[in-house]
Length: 313
View 1 (tube, helix red, strand yellow):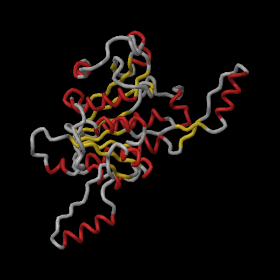
View 2 (cartoon, helix red, strand yellow; view 1 turned 90 degrees about the vertical axis):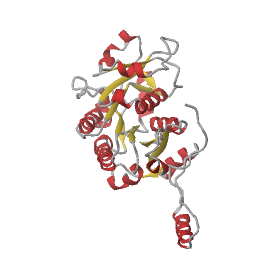
View 3 (cartoon, one colour; view 1 turned 90 degrees about the horizontal axis):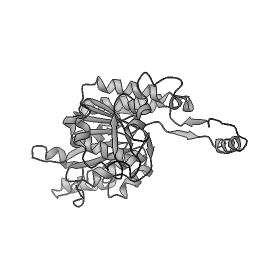
View 4 (tube, helix red, strand yellow; view 1 turned 135 degrees about the horizontal axis):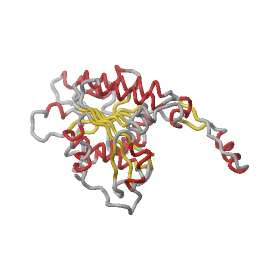
């Protein structure tokens, strides 16, 4: 659906909950990251269906979303002035925020963002950083004909972000009465692939797939309806131009070529899958699936998602 005008604030969804076809209120965490931003932007552009809200860690992250027209709400000084006006019997409503600044490692900071939400999309993840000296060393090794694994580090380890932070989000969502959690995870979490030899676990000694798998199991046992999406390699390419291929249980890691696909998928296509999962909750409830895409020009561009989800049954 196309954009239909400006947003009036996230607080209206709860008050309108008794009406038919009220927009679904959705919180996207990690919304200043590349995948989270793509999800939030798509929800924001479809305001007839969704009331988009975002959780970010900093004012810098909030400013990215403000460029879309989202708001952090009134400042404390304005809220104080409004309260004085209301005390005098004058109309002065506070602007409800679309953007919340919080920390997933602080469970208490999540409650305000999740209030009245119907769904939560978790896009937070540990992000490996390349050490400054590694680029030079890698180039030098290539010049002399040696292969060398660059060394990475995490500012915050996957155990904290992908396990503890994810657990906090699930707990807070359950407490808030959220009805659907969509978790963006990763391919490679099945026991057959999730081992010490997996290069993703070796990066920064983070064992990131171990912690992602633990978070998935916690979500599955939470009692909240869930959907887990395992993207292949994420591409910073345009979405809506490729055929999307779904699978389960890491079958696409080795079998992608047999499906005529690559091991990768544009972030924007992952964002579309998430939005479609929110639209077709009944088809993806309590399901986990993997996603990759065919190369541009190969196959048929995916425009209908319900048949993809139905084929997972």
